[in-house]
Image 1 (cartoon, rainbow, N blue to C red):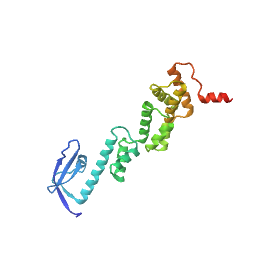
Image 2: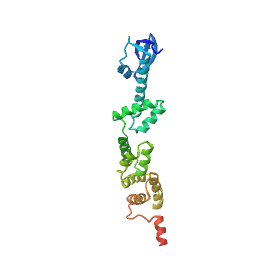
Image 3: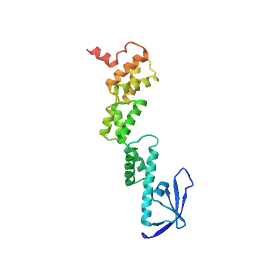
Image 4: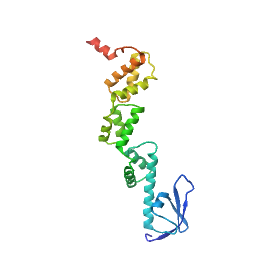
Length: 230
């Protein structure tokens, strides 16, 4: 069986032009389809004799190309982390060896870079959904970015500026009868974004003053209680 030799009798384009694959016929019968890149790389042509060993190599090359194509498609919408990409390819049914070769290829092409991905994620969050350093770290770790890269990127985040931008956007749609209700609603929102008590307290007061036009914010309940106890 291993010494069996077959001849390529036809190579025909697939019916779907959007899928760049062609059908290969051996000894007059349809045998399999291959990615056009593989056909070019393996220099396959009509009349060529193919051994079983060569067929195995060609099949492996086609699997690698399919895995790479799936990764390209996944990376089209936005940058991804290496871990995200590997998980996606695993769900698509590709094996560990194929995935590893694909990840290496993508890194060589500078299409997969966890440092660049972390920068993208930080900038995107800062621009559209500002959050705390702690929350950004958690998100990047969930994306599989290692701690050293995560810490280096997140350390550049201005916590106070992010809290203010997040609060400013939220406050536009916030309805509150008084400062205490405003503080509770906006404070809870900022807390869910991962900000600490001190940043939340100063940010809420600043936004309240800007929104209400008052010269000073009322004392927080905690401050009032503390004053009464002194």
